Image (cartoon, rainbow, N blue to C red; front, side, top):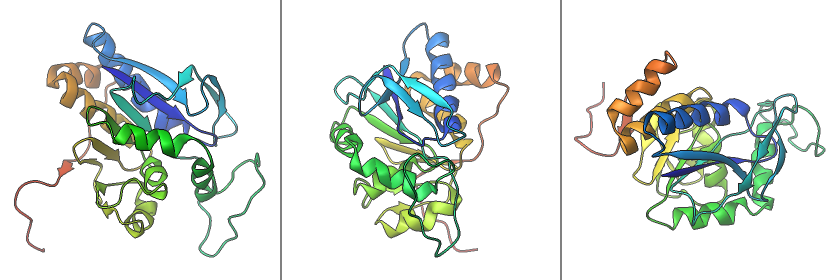
Length: 225
């Protein structure tokens, strides 16, 4: 199984590093059953994050035909106030998160993610605002997903069935909530794809217990409290 974690200009480093370490750990614990790399829509390049301009290097291009798992992070920047002008100059430090997310629409990323989602053997996972990247590209209409709690209403407005949960499993789409949910998404994917013993070994290695119930659209609907 091969995982590609996407980098784009303004990405949130923790959205990337948390699932990367967890998935890499799963690969080690499984004797190489899982490999993971950092990619970008443009190919191998240094990609600058939205957190103080800290860079990470993509070593290859996002390739839906090569990946079994594609992980999309959110952006790091200013949240902004209601009604605030979100226009900003490219390259400006601490840009507004909606600006950073919207810029991905002017790259090849939406087309590549669409190709990934059209391949039934590929699972696309998102962390934090990563779900908004797909939703803004029109790729999640009618799907169940979650994102950072401050972006749930925006996610819902794009036609997504937004769920306020730590992790949401909608089949070939798995999404996580706030920034640190990258750990939970990574561990859940390990459990789902490689089994609970591998996931538990990595959980124990990082001294982190997965949080929350993974939401799925199965079982009886709960009554209102």
